[in-house]
Length: 303
Image (cartoon, rainbow, N blue to C red):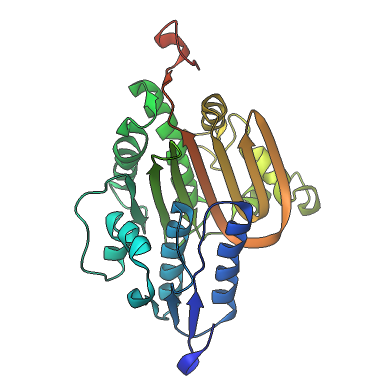
């Protein structure tokens, strides 16, 4: 990563969504934090990007720009396969690449919600309904779809209302037909879940009692929310239940904490790698099952 004229060229590697790939993303964030000049994203080493990387890099670029620095993409360094993905999901167009591809295909479009303005809630809910869970890749009833969408909407709402992400929330997804999985990533660069939970319990618990793993475990319990007096509070419990029934995977990285829901098991760990904000990565299996709420019928996986 050289530093021409006081700036840096940030080398973007191939990024999937294994634990080491998230560490690579957070390492890029740390490099940006440690620099004070302009940043050029160089994709020469990159051969593939998953949605978690695309949403994260978009947010990282906006974070740089919010600091009155230039955060730009060197499109000449982007390989044709990677560029095709970034053109199709709208990321390239959002950052100045004028030649886009028609239609999202199997992409869930790259999305930036910079402020919590009037109409944003409906826009995000429609995005989740019709671009993510309502596409038919995962077969769910409309009622179950709406219930799950409501829980994922809370991830966005929390980023706006208590994570204090002043550059907004960034998301992207993809249907991988060869693997039969549907992925969605939601990222904010706010204060992180640990800070929010510690603030919520500041009068009853010491900071030492509330490490990152403990805070994340609390956030996954049913009927928990750090937003007092607001009609939310189902936490991530319903989403967690659906992921388990679907044999999917739900991951949350926030500060030095990590939560993993997979195979009916829950893990809440403290990590050495640190990222100030929150990244939620959802993986659903696209099988032939038809998912419904328990009161909707006698057959199929039920809630």
